[in-house]
Structure formats: C-alpha cells, structure tokens
Image (cartoon, rainbow, N blue to C red):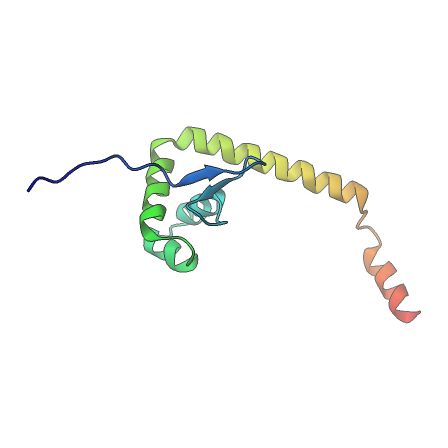
Length: 108
C-alpha cells in the first residue's frame, strides 16, 4: 500500500471586510499569530480556542512561517486600520469628561 500525498488547502478565508479567519471559525489569523508569537504551542492554541481544530492551527502556523513577511504586512495594515477607527470613534464620542457626565446623570 502506498501513501497518497495530497496538498491540503490552507484553512484561511478572507471575509468581506478583509479580515482573515482560520478554518470555519470566527478566530482571526491575527489572534493565532499573536498567541503563537507569545510562545504558545499549537496544542495550547487549540485548547485556548476550542472552535479551532489542531490540524488547522498547525496549518495556519506553517502558512505564517512560510509567508512571514506577507502576514506581517497584513497585520500591520490591520493595526493601522484599527488605529484609524479608534481615532474616528474618539473624535465622534469625546471621552473627555465622560466620568463627570456619568456621575452627574447618576445624581439626577
């Protein structure tokens, strides 16, 4: 009996807003890479995020290691976009004096 060696598709999918998800879950590539870079093993990641299966975690880590510069560029873009959204929200909803306004409502 011979072992059939078949290439598996990478378990990553981009949704409409450009976020990349792992497998058929809502766990992002960002999350898996961040936890991996903090020193977690694939098994620890699968344990920490039970919706992920271990094979998908290993495949995601392998993809990251093979395409590190592209993934890092993607993560940098996501970080910049996150900062832009944070700044827009702070401009729309000024947090200055929020505590005082909430305390004033409480005493009314």
